[in-house]
Image 1 (tube, rainbow, N blue to C red):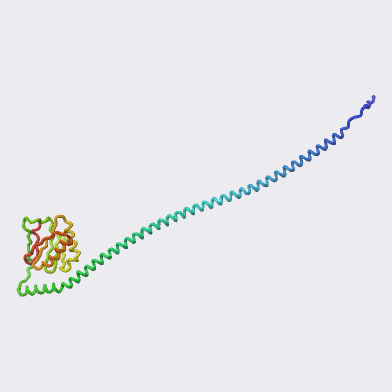
Image 2: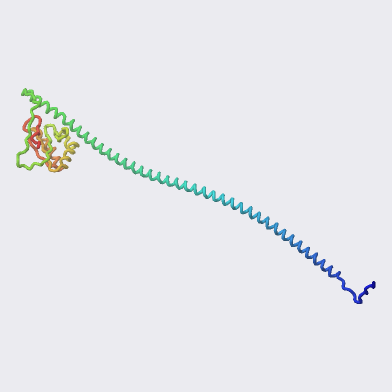
Length: 269
């Protein structure tokens, strides 16, 4: 077999190209490795930062919960303090009202004490006058007993004196109130009530006689009719003058002709 003849022209060598290609591949491999290492490092760095952030966020959440709990406790405490303050204000208002009521009661008590003191003073004055008048009354009693003994006349218990109404034609009020006047004082004969005896000296300050006059004054178409016994003119002058001047009460008088129990049955209508 015939051998191929060598070409007269020289062949191209591929070695330089292969060397350059190998270098490029090595450089690219190195670049890829470096890039991957950089990315891995960056990825590891971000993960750590995220962990720190997550930890910090967790701390913030816990702190927020704690603050909210403290705020809630403060609100509850504030509500309790508001309730306590309102209760305190209510107690202060109640205390003020009680203090005012106590002050008013104190004034009433002082006023009542003053009125009672005045009554006591009037009673003392009336007692002194009665004591001063007692010897005169006793003397009058002794004189009458002596006169009875001298005349040998015994008192008649049931010897009543019938009082007749004034004659027809006089202006007589519809409502008559009677007061007996005798030597020792007056006897208030108020219908439906017990008789009240007042000495002559006690007439100006006697509260019962004042109440009686006010009752007559408050009754329409009324008058006091004084039944004057033979020795009762002094007590009549005191009682009638006081009734007319101080209480402005209309009054008149009828004489009692003799001693004995007064009978007013003729005035019954």
